[in-house]
Length: 246
Image 1 (cartoon, rainbow, N blue to C red):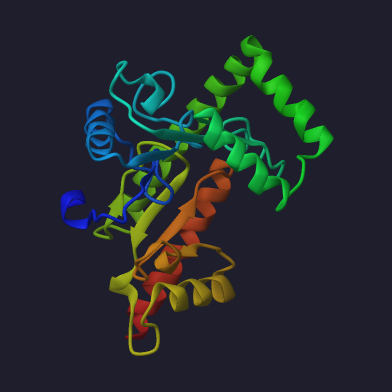
Image 2 (spheres, one colour; image 1 turned 90 degrees about the horizontal axis):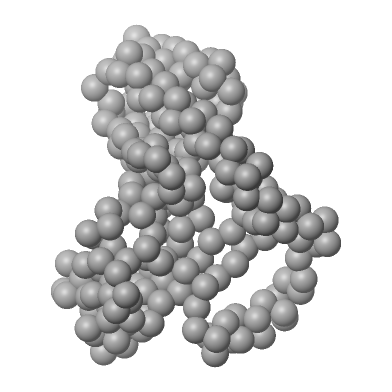
C-alpha cells in the first residue's frame, strides 16, 4: 500500500502508535519494516508515541522507534509528551527527538505560535521526568487501571452490545466501535447518532467522521469503572429502544 501511495513529492510518513482512536499498536517487527521502507526511499519517519506508556499487552511501554536496532532508522522525528503518560492533559507539555537542525526549525515555528509553556507545567513535567521511582510506580498503577478498564469495556461490548463490531485496543484508552447497524431513515451517520445519544442519554462519544469513517464512534474509558458501566447501560437502552421503535 505504501509503495502505491508514495510519489516524488513524498517527504514523510506519519504513524501513531498506540493509535488514537483504535488503540492499535505496531509491533517491533512492523516498526522495523516501516523504518527500513522510509530509510531506503529517503522519506522521513514521524512517529507519534504520546500513548506509548499506556500499553495493555505486556510489561512496560509499547514498542517505539528508538528501540529499533542501530542503523534501522533513517531521518526521523519522535513526538511525545507528558499529557497522556503522566495524566497532564491540558498542561501542554510535549517534546520531540530529532536532528538538531530540524529541532531548531520546530523551535522557530513554535515560538511564533504558542510562545512558552506555562511555568507550573514545566515544573510538573520536570518532576515527572526526573523523579523516576515515584513516576514509575504511578505509571505502573495507571497502566494496570487502564488494562482493567480495557477488559471491562470489551466485556460490556460482548454482553450489552453483542454482534457490534469493535476493535480490541492494545494501547491508549479508547474503544472504537461501529454503529452503522443502528442507523435508520433519520439517523444516517455516526455524527447524527452521537448527537441523539447525547441529547437523550447524556452520553458523549466522538463520531468517527473526525477519523475518516462516520459509521464508527470513539469512547474514552479514562473514567471510573462505574461511570463506564453506566454509560454502556444507557447506550444499550438507547439501542434497544430504537430497535423496538422500528
